[in-house]
Length: 307
Image 1 (tube, rainbow, N blue to C red):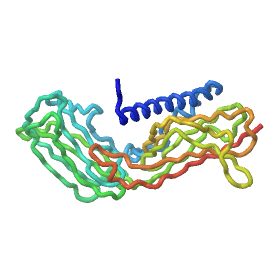
Image 2: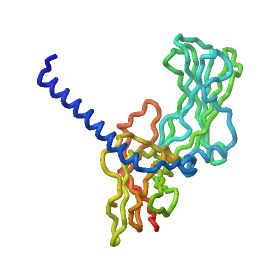
Image 3: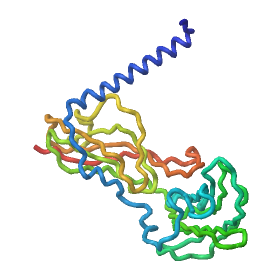
Image 4: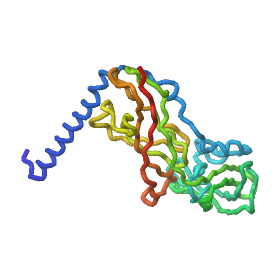
């Protein structure tokens, strides 16, 4: 088969990408064979470090929709969803009533929604806001929404939806809390120990203690303290790395990374260094391009190599 100049160029480029990928995989696999396998310690199993919903969980319990969205009455295809219970900044909060089927459905129901600000004990603050809508005809891919705009000031809200029938009889009532937090990009690198011997394995992870989601990749650097300044250690990982994106939501620790301390690594003070970015969690339909991106930050965690 004859290829045009453009086709030959694309084929060569594709072949080069395959070769580079194979070389990267070989480079990654080669040192792994020489590094002893060490199972992850219990340190890597506990992932929640600071639950952003902890203040809500201390409030009086509410009747929330089930995890699957089933409401327990009416047609079995009905699904009731809520907006996230944790938000950074303002936006919309409330319910969506939709269908888990391909055919439309008419319901002679009315939805009466209420939003009220609450304090840390779940008690109302100020006057509630109300909204009422007829359910009527539901389309398969379009939900009937009961939403309220809320400000970006930190605080708590309770949203309630009362569903009533054609004669005004109560069918079901659902509520949930929302915590609104200010955007805080804060994370730390945590190690499973402070000292390591040559031949041992160091485990570390990113722990997100802020309200923004932490995004980062696989690469990291090991630096050595010499003469009062940090410089990259000879043993720091080098070469190609797999370009994948990893995230740690607010209050959650990411996957564990490991660094094998070579037997010949000199005794001294070292640190792990890793760059991360922060962005808020987005609700469906929100455009990430419209979100202001805070500057990247570099996390470090120190450790000692001892005899």
